[in-house]
Image (tube, rainbow, N blue to C red; front, side, top):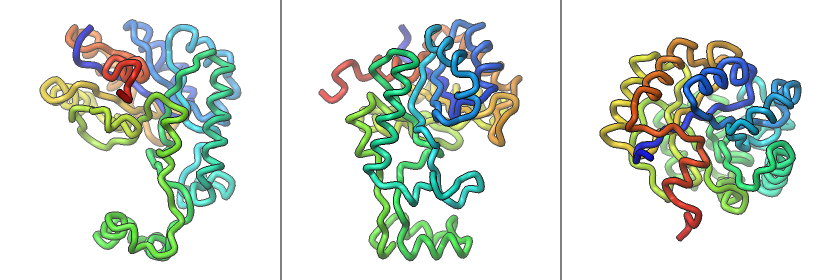
Length: 270
């Protein structure tokens, strides 16, 4: 087994995962990790197919039931807005999702990926609300508010990563652009990744090159493969990456949980 590990992870239980990603992975002898939100139409409507790929060695990870995100996103309603979640509500949802996934694949050990890579729930304070209303969320002023939370007066926001050790072996965070640092145990509940959506073959190759020099575990995050989502890795670029990984005997391609266990062992807290 190589000391360099790559994991291919896929979010949101999309049709293109079953129709395109799984056959392309299996053609090369790979297994992926599919972080599924259990209310997704393509999960509910193709339940037996998801069960089948789990039996074939692919990993089903927890991505919540309702995919909560901030209310500013157009597809979010009051019912699954993160601002309206409490820690208790999130805990109930995560536990229920784990129970449902167990009924599908019979696996006790589970991993998690934060919807939209966001671990924060609850109502923001006055400063953040004003910044959002003014369209200033991506300014230097906003940077100060996020750096010094006490500036966001009356905030009720909480980081729900504190719930995860009870429920999951590890969890994947987000990523943008190149990411090749050594992943340590202190990253365990927010493992960094490379968001591969929109990346072309040359950019994917650049990530692999940097990883070979600097990394130990490279996690790719995908949404749509070729189609089916506003975030997409095109079919030829995805195929290019898989071919490069298949040809490289110095890299092991493993599902997210298996990779984490290879790095940290059964007693990761030791």
